[in-house]
Amino acid sequence: MKAEALQFVASQVERAVIETRQALGELAVERKLAGGCSCLIPILDQYRVEVAELDDESAFRLDKVGMTITVSANATLFVWNAMYDLAEEIGFEGTDRTRAQETAVNQFLIHELFHVNQKLWDYSAVPAVKAGLPNIGLAILDLAADVEAAWVCAQVEGQIAGDGESALLHFVNALLRAYVIGAFVFDSRSSAKRQRAIGLVISMILVQAQIKGTLNLSQVNQKWTPISPVLAFDLEGAQRFNGIILSDHIGLLIPDHDVFDGDLLKELWDMVGNRPIKRIVELTAMFLRAAGAITE
Image 1: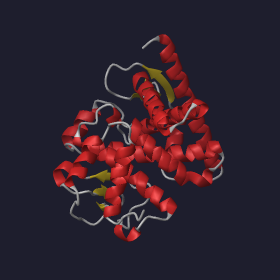
Image 2: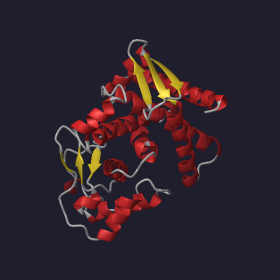
Image 3: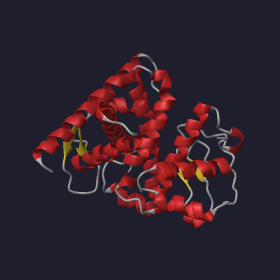
């Protein structure tokens, strides 16, 4: 990476740290911290966040002796560029597009900080997780960090914008960003990453339906909440549209039912990671309507 690009990425991460810590501090003073917000404050206070080109696939490194968190410059730049593409799809231009990219970097940083809280301190732990919980362990950890980071980012954005009462609206946007900037943008071919990706889209649509009043709670697990991660089924293997909510009481998201169109189910499965993302959202919403989970 050229020196200018590295300097730019470092400035964006520094901005993200300052914005996030300031907003969380204000929320703490106002006693409005919710979800996983409070666990990030000690991490940001105790560790210095730096940026460097890392020589492996890790997005960050934790140095407990030097009390530093080193964020991958390449991963951060990838997120910045991925959000540029999404902003273009949505129609954002100028300062709106730039702010969308800045918010994506904030969310990416928060996601990695949640991995610190999960004790996933080093990339060397990843093979152990994959071996100990084959196919699903890393997806669960990443999905939990995805949703927690989206929720915290929504709180931060609401605080910065001065409209904290619209947290759920910011959360919908953050879940969409989570889909775009998650690890599956690097490799969407593994089943677990597809399950994680579709689960984020499911969450986004359910939260949006809750805001609009079109969520049919009688057809959704009563333990589901907006911040409950949803791990979608392997649609190809199960030939079912469903998922598992990862909450205090794990269970199926919706009652089991037969798929009414296997071709569309396969299309949804195969589309993960493709752009534009409008079609995957349409298909996911269609299956949720067919299951009676949403009414519009």
